[in-house]
Length: 134
Image 1 (cartoon, rainbow, N blue to C red):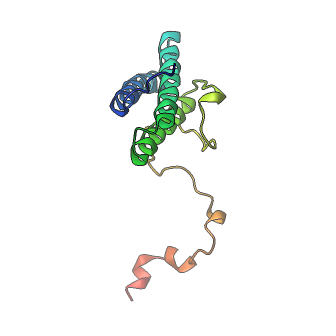
Image 2 (image 1 turned 180 degrees about the vertical axis):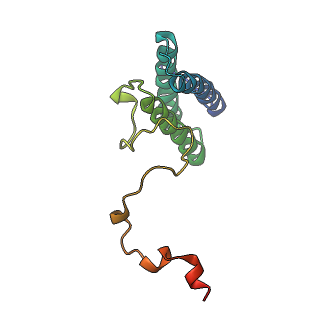
């Protein structure tokens, strides 16, 4: 007897619930307050449920590819957030590579960029803008 997969909408709701807990975790982190064991336990338990639910939905083949990709992206984003805030996520919950966890809800683009990794850089692009007007 196989387990019926959860609906995509239930998994999306679970993901939103996790994000609400992550926001609380971020708030505590910003205030330099310790997170309760209950909060971190709830987050990891819900992530585990999300991962298992997505796997079941994928195995059932009842959802289109775009929905599955969207759910997996939400899952990866959530894992990145919580790991960046110090919550340990089991290896079995990960998909693919570790992309560097920042603990930020959105990419603000304020990470330092290695100028040597950009390839060719036009040095004139950094000249004084007033000189270009002449």
